[in-house]
Image 1 (cartoon, rainbow, N blue to C red):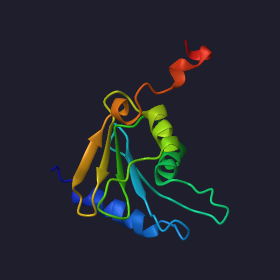
Image 2 (tube, rainbow, N blue to C red):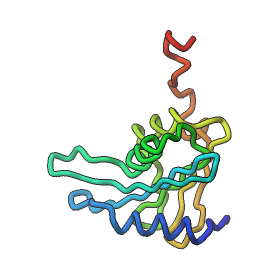
Image 3 (cartoon, one colour):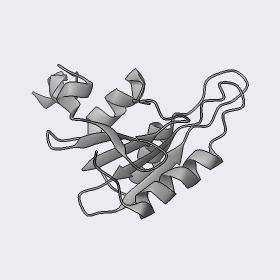
Length: 136
């Protein structure tokens, strides 16, 4: 298996430890990496009415706030050693800013890349900006 660099793993572990998941007890961390190497971390944030913010969504929001609009790589880490893939909403969010070359990687706490996806494998036949009449 491929091993992620330790700085990335440390960033994910820090975000994971800062996640606020008192209801699901399922903390998740994500890092969005742009083509220029900038990275944006996020963690899930739950609230009492059960509408929370996913780790991927919070990392994408930080990326957008910094003026970035393209993803080179996405890294996700969940609470255990099992695969913790993005939910359907986050798959669509990732799709919005990805290219065919974007890789989505799920990591273990030790930094092992458990599985790597492309957008075509993570969300086949995805709806995107090109499907809207104004972009055709």
